[in-house]
Length: 248
Image 1 (tube, rainbow, N blue to C red):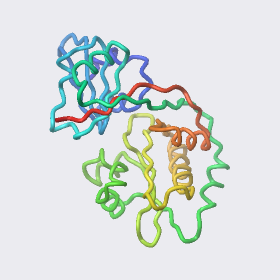
Image 2: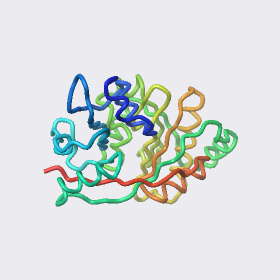
Image 3: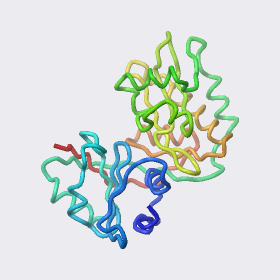
Image 4: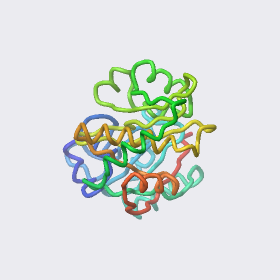
């Protein structure tokens, strides 16, 4: 991994760091000894760095790749190549990067947020039972999808859910991990959205990360996610090109 680090230099993305540090994910390069181009696949995401390479843009092994993957190019040259190779299976859209800043969180506010939870709901840490529950439903499986077993999650992951009537209805957890923190994943069951549950559950996860000395990194799939992040203390950075690619 050390040989491709320079190809992703200055790319402020924790999923890339997770792979380069050997925590999770897989990488390919055009050369083992002197790589000029590289590809990282981790979870539902794929990143390309270095010199644009057509062979890598075609490289989506079924063993490592979901049927639909989010492809993120390093620059416009990679964009052009990706669009030319996969033009019939692509959907282009924007995701939203959130700044990674220390000392922007108000712990008293986060504690206050958690205290707003109605007595009819419960916050629970993801234990072995909850791990099985969230992985059994489509809406929540991403909360633990990058951890093959509960032991994997328990060793390096962290997460909380909100339970109502003995059902998991919302969760906030580590989508991925790296040496200094996590990338946050938040999901809410459709009929429980717009009740403030994601705000409360995220507050609990962020507090736990801060207590553990971990940075709770946030990347937004849409403007609603940006707004939620900003309510929690984060600041918007920039939007960036993403492709949704259907793998045949």
